[in-house]
Image (tube, rainbow, N blue to C red):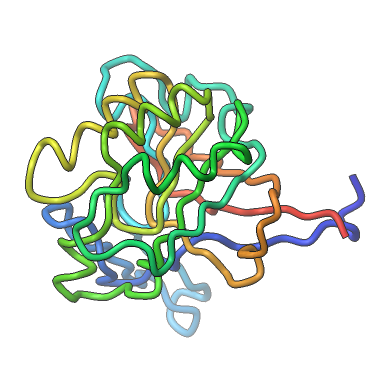
Length: 224
């Protein structure tokens, strides 16, 4: 592979001190602990929940000893990426059901990373809409992706599940993670990837023993 012939697309959100995060998980803290003009170098301390900012949920999130970033093979964390464009088709606190995902069925193949763009990454902030009323994936749509044999399902909101009830929050996690399908949350969609093309994507986690999730640098690749 010639690096000069590969274009990279960053599909991750920035981590910064006090940035938005799932309610009750705490906000990230990025603190400079050493300064170049004092210690001769700069260094920072990062305190962050594994389920904050762009991250991958492993089966360990809902099932003990089911696989984490240490035990799962690297091949599980990359594959062809199919982007579902639902911008303008969902509203706050809406369950994304079969009627919205089934029309994309022909483009989704076994082993794909399905990445859902609802437009919510453009709303990132501390509004009630972003923090508690994002669109979420319902059980039937989750079963649809499971039956397709995909590797991962991602979304640009704080969680693939909704907020406020078990039915909204947990069902999609149980269906997908129970089948060994990864979940990626807080995906960022640059305009350049919204052209209908499939691109290879990688979502490699940190090697956190028993880690139910890990921050990732989600990247899409394209030959040029």
